[in-house]
Amino acid sequence: VFQLSLPLNFLGTIYREMRQSLLDLEVLFNLQTQNRVIEDKPDAKPLALQGGSISFENVNFAYHEDRPIFRDLSFTIPAGKKVALVGPSGCGKSTVFRLLFRFYEPSSGRILIDGQDVSALQLASLRQAIGVVPQDTPLFHSDVMHNIRYGRMTASDEDVIEAAKSAHVHEAVMRLSEGYKTKVGERGLMISGGEKQRLAVARVLLKDPPILFFDEATSALDAHTETDLMRNINAVLLQKARTSIFIAHRLRTVVEADLIIVLREGQVVEQGTHDELMRLGGLYYSMWQQQAADTHHEEAVSVESTSA
Ligand code: ATP
Image (cartoon, rainbow, N blue to C red; front, side, top):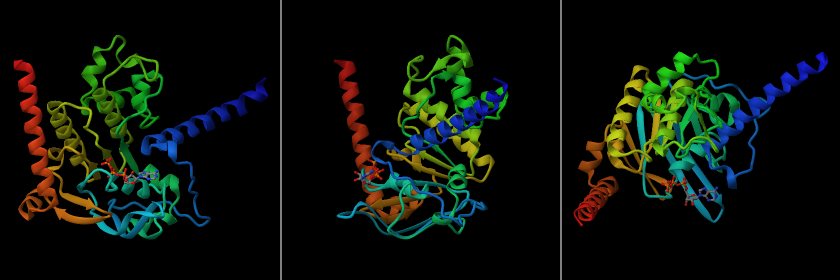
Protein backbone atom coordinates (compact mmCIF):
# COMPACT_ATOMS: atom_id res chain seq x y z
CA VAL A 1 0.00 0.00 0.00
CA PHE A 2 2.74 2.40 0.98
CA GLN A 3 4.73 1.53 -2.06
CA LEU A 4 1.74 2.32 -4.21
CA SER A 5 1.08 5.77 -2.85
CA LEU A 6 4.10 7.41 -4.44
CA PRO A 7 3.41 6.32 -8.02
CA LEU A 8 -0.24 7.20 -7.54
CA ASN A 9 0.69 10.69 -6.44
CA PHE A 10 2.99 10.90 -9.35
CA LEU A 11 0.24 9.80 -11.71
CA GLY A 12 -2.01 12.41 -10.16
CA THR A 13 0.54 15.07 -10.96
CA ILE A 14 0.89 13.87 -14.51
CA TYR A 15 -2.87 13.74 -14.86
CA ARG A 16 -3.18 17.31 -13.63
CA GLU A 17 -0.47 18.47 -15.98
CA MET A 18 -2.09 16.71 -18.89
CA ARG A 19 -5.39 18.25 -18.01
CA GLN A 20 -3.73 21.62 -17.81
CA SER A 21 -2.17 21.37 -21.23
CA LEU A 22 -5.35 19.93 -22.73
CA LEU A 23 -7.36 22.76 -21.33
CA ASP A 24 -4.78 25.26 -22.56
CA LEU A 25 -5.10 23.88 -26.05
CA GLU A 26 -8.84 23.79 -25.85
CA VAL A 27 -8.82 27.35 -24.69
CA LEU A 28 -6.54 28.52 -27.43
CA PHE A 29 -8.07 26.82 -30.39
CA ASN A 30 -11.35 25.26 -31.24
CA LEU A 31 -9.90 21.81 -31.18
CA GLN A 32 -12.58 19.68 -32.76
CA THR A 33 -11.17 19.73 -36.26
CA GLN A 34 -7.53 19.90 -35.29
CA ASN A 35 -5.65 16.84 -34.20
CA ARG A 36 -2.19 17.34 -35.56
CA VAL A 37 0.46 17.58 -32.87
CA ILE A 38 3.55 19.66 -33.48
CA GLU A 39 6.56 18.57 -31.49
CA ASP A 40 9.76 20.21 -30.34
CA LYS A 41 12.72 19.89 -32.64
CA PRO A 42 15.57 17.89 -31.05
CA ASP A 43 17.63 21.05 -30.59
CA ALA A 44 14.69 23.25 -29.56
CA LYS A 45 15.57 26.07 -27.18
CA PRO A 46 13.46 27.80 -24.55
CA LEU A 47 12.17 31.23 -25.48
CA ALA A 48 14.52 33.94 -24.17
CA LEU A 49 11.98 36.65 -23.68
CA GLN A 50 12.97 40.30 -23.81
CA GLY A 51 10.17 42.77 -24.48
CA GLY A 52 7.81 40.41 -26.29
CA SER A 53 7.87 41.80 -29.84
CA ILE A 54 6.21 39.65 -32.50
CA SER A 55 6.99 39.61 -36.22
CA PHE A 56 5.48 37.80 -39.16
CA GLU A 57 7.90 37.78 -42.11
CA ASN A 58 6.50 36.82 -45.52
CA VAL A 59 4.28 34.15 -44.04
CA ASN A 60 2.38 31.90 -46.41
CA PHE A 61 -0.24 29.60 -45.01
CA ALA A 62 -3.25 27.53 -46.10
CA TYR A 63 -5.42 25.04 -44.21
CA HIS A 64 -6.10 23.45 -47.58
CA GLU A 65 -3.75 23.92 -50.51
CA ASP A 66 -6.41 25.24 -52.84
CA ARG A 67 -7.35 28.07 -50.50
CA PRO A 68 -4.49 30.27 -49.29
CA ILE A 69 -5.20 32.20 -46.09
CA PHE A 70 -1.98 34.24 -45.87
CA ARG A 71 0.12 35.42 -48.83
CA ASP A 72 3.48 36.87 -47.88
CA LEU A 73 1.93 38.26 -44.72
CA SER A 74 4.32 40.60 -42.90
CA PHE A 75 3.79 42.79 -39.86
CA THR A 76 5.45 43.67 -36.57
CA ILE A 77 3.85 44.01 -33.16
CA PRO A 78 6.24 46.14 -31.12
CA ALA A 79 7.21 45.02 -27.62
CA GLY A 80 4.95 46.27 -24.86
CA LYS A 81 2.35 47.78 -27.16
CA LYS A 82 -1.36 47.30 -27.37
CA VAL A 83 -2.23 46.15 -30.85
CA ALA A 84 -5.58 45.39 -32.46
CA LEU A 85 -6.11 43.00 -35.36
CA VAL A 86 -9.16 43.87 -37.41
CA GLY A 87 -10.55 42.83 -40.76
CA PRO A 88 -13.56 41.21 -42.36
CA SER A 89 -14.86 37.94 -40.92
CA GLY A 90 -12.75 35.02 -42.10
CA CYS A 91 -9.70 37.12 -43.04
CA GLY A 92 -7.52 35.08 -40.70
CA LYS A 93 -7.33 36.99 -37.42
CA SER A 94 -7.61 33.86 -35.28
CA THR A 95 -5.25 32.05 -37.63
CA VAL A 96 -2.52 34.56 -36.70
CA PHE A 97 -2.68 33.13 -33.19
CA ARG A 98 -2.84 29.54 -34.23
CA LEU A 99 0.42 30.08 -36.12
CA LEU A 100 1.98 32.07 -33.31
CA PHE A 101 1.32 29.22 -30.89
CA ARG A 102 2.52 26.79 -33.51
CA PHE A 103 -0.64 24.87 -33.67
CA TYR A 104 -0.09 25.07 -37.39
CA GLU A 105 3.10 25.94 -39.25
CA PRO A 106 3.47 28.28 -42.22
CA SER A 107 4.42 26.73 -45.56
CA SER A 108 7.04 29.47 -45.87
CA GLY A 109 8.16 32.59 -44.05
CA ARG A 110 9.06 33.09 -40.41
CA ILE A 111 7.31 34.00 -37.18
CA LEU A 112 9.54 35.59 -34.58
CA ILE A 113 9.19 36.50 -30.93
CA ASP A 114 11.97 38.85 -29.83
CA GLY A 115 13.87 37.79 -32.94
CA GLN A 116 13.60 34.05 -32.20
CA ASP A 117 11.94 31.85 -34.78
CA VAL A 118 9.05 30.12 -33.01
CA SER A 119 9.63 26.93 -35.00
CA ALA A 120 12.97 26.51 -33.18
CA LEU A 121 11.53 27.05 -29.70
CA GLN A 122 10.34 24.62 -27.05
CA LEU A 123 6.58 24.65 -27.29
CA ALA A 124 6.06 24.72 -23.55
CA SER A 125 8.16 27.86 -23.14
CA LEU A 126 6.35 29.50 -26.04
CA ARG A 127 2.89 28.78 -24.67
CA GLN A 128 3.86 29.71 -21.16
CA ALA A 129 4.75 33.21 -22.32
CA ILE A 130 1.31 33.89 -23.74
CA GLY A 131 -2.00 34.29 -21.94
CA VAL A 132 -5.31 34.05 -23.72
CA VAL A 133 -8.81 35.29 -23.06
CA PRO A 134 -10.72 33.24 -25.63
CA GLN A 135 -14.18 33.80 -27.06
CA ASP A 136 -15.63 31.13 -24.84
CA THR A 137 -13.91 30.07 -21.65
CA PRO A 138 -14.18 26.50 -20.46
CA LEU A 139 -14.73 26.30 -16.70
CA PHE A 140 -13.92 23.36 -14.46
CA HIS A 141 -16.68 21.80 -12.46
CA SER A 142 -15.11 23.18 -9.36
CA ASP A 143 -15.39 26.28 -7.22
CA VAL A 144 -14.78 29.83 -8.39
CA MET A 145 -11.56 30.07 -6.39
CA HIS A 146 -10.09 27.08 -8.21
CA ASN A 147 -11.29 28.27 -11.57
CA ILE A 148 -9.42 31.53 -11.21
CA ARG A 149 -6.40 30.06 -9.44
CA TYR A 150 -5.94 27.81 -12.44
CA GLY A 151 -4.09 30.73 -14.03
CA ARG A 152 -1.32 30.22 -11.44
CA MET A 153 -1.75 27.25 -9.16
CA THR A 154 0.61 28.67 -6.50
CA ALA A 155 -1.40 31.88 -6.07
CA SER A 156 -2.76 32.66 -2.60
CA ASP A 157 -6.46 33.29 -1.94
CA GLU A 158 -5.64 36.99 -1.64
CA ASP A 159 -3.98 37.00 -5.07
CA VAL A 160 -7.04 35.31 -6.55
CA ILE A 161 -9.38 37.86 -5.01
CA GLU A 162 -7.23 40.73 -6.18
CA ALA A 163 -7.27 39.38 -9.74
CA ALA A 164 -11.05 39.01 -9.52
CA LYS A 165 -11.36 42.62 -8.42
CA SER A 166 -9.20 43.83 -11.31
CA ALA A 167 -11.34 41.81 -13.69
CA HIS A 168 -14.54 43.30 -12.19
CA VAL A 169 -15.96 39.96 -11.20
CA HIS A 170 -15.42 40.09 -7.43
CA GLU A 171 -18.80 41.63 -6.66
CA ALA A 172 -20.62 39.11 -8.81
CA VAL A 173 -18.78 36.30 -6.98
CA MET A 174 -19.72 37.77 -3.60
CA ARG A 175 -23.37 37.65 -4.62
CA LEU A 176 -23.17 33.88 -5.26
CA SER A 177 -24.56 31.66 -2.50
CA GLU A 178 -21.16 30.49 -1.29
CA GLY A 179 -18.95 33.25 -2.69
CA TYR A 180 -15.61 31.91 -3.92
CA LYS A 181 -16.59 28.42 -2.75
CA THR A 182 -19.54 28.27 -5.14
CA LYS A 183 -19.28 25.50 -7.71
CA VAL A 184 -19.37 26.55 -11.36
CA GLY A 185 -18.69 24.71 -14.60
CA GLU A 186 -20.62 22.22 -16.70
CA ARG A 187 -23.29 21.08 -14.31
CA GLY A 188 -22.63 23.79 -11.78
CA LEU A 189 -24.30 27.05 -11.24
CA MET A 190 -25.23 29.07 -14.29
CA ILE A 191 -23.18 32.18 -14.59
CA SER A 192 -23.61 34.68 -17.37
CA GLY A 193 -21.42 34.84 -20.46
CA GLY A 194 -20.02 38.16 -19.29
CA GLU A 195 -19.13 36.80 -15.85
CA LYS A 196 -17.51 33.79 -17.42
CA GLN A 197 -15.41 36.04 -19.58
CA ARG A 198 -14.40 38.13 -16.59
CA LEU A 199 -13.37 34.95 -14.77
CA ALA A 200 -11.15 34.26 -17.78
CA VAL A 201 -9.68 37.74 -17.51
CA ALA A 202 -9.00 37.19 -13.79
CA ARG A 203 -7.35 33.86 -14.60
CA VAL A 204 -5.07 35.40 -17.18
CA LEU A 205 -4.21 38.38 -14.96
CA LEU A 206 -3.13 35.87 -12.35
CA LYS A 207 -1.00 34.00 -14.88
CA ASP A 208 0.58 37.38 -15.62
CA PRO A 209 2.16 36.43 -18.94
CA PRO A 210 4.38 38.89 -20.81
CA ILE A 211 2.20 38.54 -23.91
CA LEU A 212 -1.59 38.74 -23.72
CA PHE A 213 -4.09 37.81 -26.36
CA PHE A 214 -7.76 38.74 -26.18
CA ASP A 215 -9.98 37.07 -28.73
CA GLU A 216 -13.07 39.23 -28.75
CA ALA A 217 -12.59 39.35 -25.03
CA THR A 218 -15.47 41.70 -24.52
CA SER A 219 -17.98 40.23 -26.94
CA ALA A 220 -20.33 38.85 -24.28
CA LEU A 221 -20.50 42.09 -22.34
CA ASP A 222 -22.85 45.00 -22.58
CA ALA A 223 -21.40 48.34 -23.68
CA HIS A 224 -21.14 49.84 -20.19
CA THR A 225 -19.46 46.83 -18.56
CA GLU A 226 -17.24 46.51 -21.59
CA THR A 227 -15.93 50.06 -21.27
CA ASP A 228 -15.35 49.51 -17.58
CA LEU A 229 -13.55 46.25 -18.10
CA MET A 230 -11.37 47.63 -20.88
CA ARG A 231 -10.40 50.55 -18.69
CA ASN A 232 -9.40 48.11 -16.00
CA ILE A 233 -7.51 45.78 -18.28
CA ASN A 234 -5.65 48.83 -19.57
CA ALA A 235 -4.81 49.95 -16.04
CA VAL A 236 -3.49 46.49 -15.19
CA LEU A 237 -1.65 46.20 -18.50
CA LEU A 238 -0.13 49.63 -18.25
CA GLN A 239 1.44 48.92 -14.90
CA LYS A 240 3.84 46.74 -16.83
CA ALA A 241 4.94 47.11 -20.39
CA ARG A 242 3.26 44.07 -21.83
CA THR A 243 2.52 43.15 -25.39
CA SER A 244 -1.20 42.74 -25.85
CA ILE A 245 -3.12 41.78 -28.94
CA PHE A 246 -6.85 42.25 -29.32
CA ILE A 247 -9.20 40.80 -31.87
CA ALA A 248 -12.31 42.90 -31.64
CA HIS A 249 -15.36 43.13 -33.80
CA ARG A 250 -16.73 46.16 -32.09
CA LEU A 251 -14.33 48.76 -33.37
CA ARG A 252 -14.85 51.16 -30.53
CA THR A 253 -12.87 48.78 -28.31
CA VAL A 254 -9.79 49.29 -30.49
CA VAL A 255 -9.80 53.09 -30.71
CA GLU A 256 -7.10 53.42 -28.08
CA ALA A 257 -4.78 50.76 -29.46
CA ASP A 258 -1.19 51.89 -30.11
CA LEU A 259 -1.41 50.17 -33.46
CA ILE A 260 -4.28 48.78 -35.51
CA ILE A 261 -3.41 46.21 -38.17
CA VAL A 262 -6.06 45.74 -40.85
CA LEU A 263 -6.06 42.39 -42.66
CA ARG A 264 -7.80 41.50 -45.87
CA GLU A 265 -7.33 38.60 -48.25
CA GLY A 266 -4.29 37.30 -46.46
CA GLN A 267 -2.35 40.55 -46.31
CA VAL A 268 -2.01 43.71 -44.28
CA VAL A 269 -3.86 46.39 -46.18
CA GLU A 270 -3.54 49.24 -43.67
CA GLN A 271 -1.92 49.91 -40.33
CA GLY A 272 -1.73 52.85 -37.98
CA THR A 273 -3.57 54.47 -35.10
CA HIS A 274 -7.31 55.05 -35.17
CA ASP A 275 -6.88 58.69 -36.19
CA GLU A 276 -4.40 57.86 -38.93
CA LEU A 277 -6.63 55.16 -40.37
CA MET A 278 -9.73 57.36 -40.23
CA ARG A 279 -7.85 60.07 -42.13
CA LEU A 280 -6.73 57.49 -44.67
CA GLY A 281 -10.37 56.84 -45.56
CA GLY A 282 -9.79 53.20 -46.59
CA LEU A 283 -11.05 49.83 -45.36
CA TYR A 284 -10.87 50.68 -41.65
CA TYR A 285 -12.77 53.88 -42.30
CA SER A 286 -15.50 52.08 -44.20
CA MET A 287 -15.76 49.32 -41.56
CA TRP A 288 -16.21 52.08 -39.03
CA GLN A 289 -18.92 53.77 -41.11
CA GLN A 290 -20.69 50.46 -41.57
CA GLN A 291 -20.59 49.74 -37.87
CA ALA A 292 -21.91 53.19 -36.99
CA ALA A 293 -24.79 52.62 -39.42
CA ASP A 294 -25.52 49.20 -37.87
CA THR A 295 -25.45 50.65 -34.36
CA HIS A 296 -27.89 53.39 -35.32
CA HIS A 297 -30.09 50.78 -36.90
CA GLU A 298 -30.03 48.61 -33.74
CA GLU A 299 -30.81 51.61 -31.57
CA ALA A 300 -33.65 52.65 -33.84
CA VAL A 301 -35.06 49.12 -33.71
CA SER A 302 -34.86 48.93 -29.93
CA VAL A 303 -36.51 52.34 -29.58
CA GLU A 304 -39.29 51.14 -31.89
CA SER A 305 -39.79 47.95 -29.92
CA THR A 306 -39.87 49.69 -26.53
CA SER A 307 -42.31 52.32 -27.76
CA ALA A 308 -44.55 49.67 -29.35
P1 ATP B 1 -13.84 35.82 -37.62
O1 ATP B 1 -13.62 37.30 -37.63
O2 ATP B 1 -15.11 35.43 -38.31
O3 ATP B 1 -13.66 35.18 -36.28
P2 ATP B 1 -11.13 35.28 -38.53
O4 ATP B 1 -10.65 36.46 -39.25
O5 ATP B 1 -10.64 35.07 -37.15
O6 ATP B 1 -12.71 35.19 -38.58
P3 ATP B 1 -10.04 32.65 -39.04
O7 ATP B 1 -10.80 31.97 -37.97
O8 ATP B 1 -8.59 32.88 -38.81
O9 ATP B 1 -10.74 34.02 -39.43
O10 ATP B 1 -10.24 31.82 -40.37
C1 ATP B 1 -9.68 32.23 -41.63
C2 ATP B 1 -10.26 31.34 -42.72
O11 ATP B 1 -9.78 30.01 -42.59
C3 ATP B 1 -11.78 31.24 -42.68
O12 ATP B 1 -12.26 31.28 -44.00
C4 ATP B 1 -12.05 29.89 -42.08
O13 ATP B 1 -13.22 29.33 -42.60
C5 ATP B 1 -10.83 29.08 -42.47
N1 ATP B 1 -10.48 28.11 -41.42
C6 ATP B 1 -10.34 28.36 -40.11
N2 ATP B 1 -9.97 27.26 -39.44
C7 ATP B 1 -9.89 26.27 -40.34
C8 ATP B 1 -9.56 24.87 -40.28
N3 ATP B 1 -9.23 24.30 -39.13
N4 ATP B 1 -9.59 24.19 -41.43
C9 ATP B 1 -9.93 24.76 -42.60
N5 ATP B 1 -10.23 26.06 -42.74
C10 ATP B 1 -10.22 26.81 -41.63
